[in-house]
Image (cartoon, rainbow, N blue to C red; front, side, top):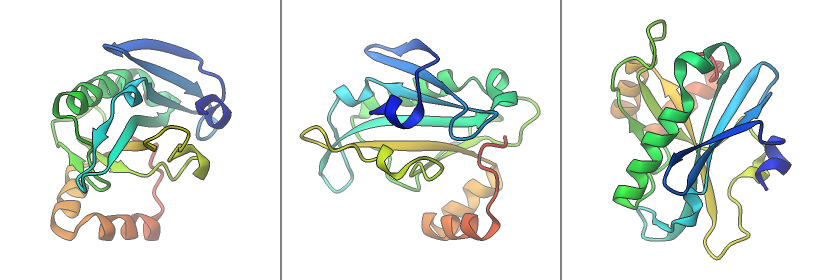
Length: 170
């Protein structure tokens, strides 16, 4: 399913027990890279509404940010956190701010979004008893995290639709 929608896995590494961090080149666009957890979906998580679901995380950025951003480390942290609490962060959840991801960025938090830069058929995957959802971890700045907190995720996403920022530009 993943390689059908994201292309071949270019590289991978174990990021936590039973979970691989996979790298996909030129996805979602040329000059960008996508990193995704593979294997987190072996766990069944509970959504806030009580429904069972399986989960994978996805992070994407322009190629020039890959080394400084260290997406596999971010995926490892979030996978370990999800496994420890055995729940899924709902759409619109902000994780952080926890300090800059790297020195030359203002991004300090992650916003849990639907993977809108990717093919709609990527998520959810319904080939298992529980659907597999993919959460796109979008890096955001502290002022954006505060906006989500004060106005809600729906207003934030409406604002993103208006401005149409490059969500891969860190």
